[in-house]
Length: 482
Image (tube, rainbow, N blue to C red):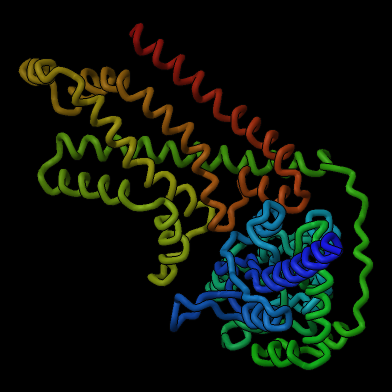
């Protein structure tokens, strides 16, 4: 009798704990990844209250949480890293205009879709050269990195595609003439271009795809809950209300209620090196070109700054000192943004390649100026005084006495800076240039082969930077013998 009573009490306790555990699981906040830098109308910071997140996907997430009975916690993550971060467990869901494609399905589980998107061509109002999709051949066309639009442009061929991660910059560059057209998802075009008198749509929109919520592979239980919530939001009009509130409802959304997907995934044959290696090599060539030109500029301008700072009159000394301190004290990224996106407001428009070379070169010139200054000041003053006493001019003094000796001191740090510049050149990807690191990121986000492609990319960096170290060593030995 006592045993039966104990068993009964234990069963009651287990039932209570099970119910409490289930309730706790339901009450646990649901983290969802998004990228605020992706821009409107998806998820972005409210311009009036920057600490608030707004966008149709923010409203979608809130409505989803209400249906699931769970608090939704946004987690800021770079768009390219959403699915890898999801896999690491940084959050449970990723909601940020993620396209339902076989490539993405290889890296994550997906919900039923919540939006049907199309691609939209946008051109300047006074430009009539583009009337249909094929007219984009031979044109400078802006699009988003690793998007369906980018893949369509690649398939078309003959397009000078410029890759962006910032939607505002995409349409701004079109308006000021850096681009001939923009080809991107229609929701972006509707938000950034529809009200701009300088831009017009080339109708009709084309292509069709789906946005869906990404989940970790194997998280089938949560997927069923999310799908059920989305089904309910479609049926009761909640989703339509959200989309209409952002002027995103189109007749194509009627396809959502009838959507059926068995999650088919194309076989993954691994990295196709015949296809990917040329893209990495092309990125490496861009890296080498930018780095060499930027370093030449940095060395020449840095030498002038060092000479001005040591031998120049007071105004030049002040200018050189201020330049070095300001440039070294501000981020290179901000300097690039000012050169590429800021100068057009003053009527100065630079090509992306020119802006990249100038940005890196002018920034590294500050470092080189200090290297050269240290080398010049390492030359004993007595040699300069003796040379001037013998009748040498200031120029002859620098040319024949000071600079040859100062270079022996400056070469090692200059070489280190050159190698560092190779790696820092990856930052020019923010102004639409596709260098080696950007090429790696694009390929890795498409294939999820971060290790294999990463090792190959690192090897390429070693191959292109190691000769610089050998050259520096050879130069040092030669100067030492001179």
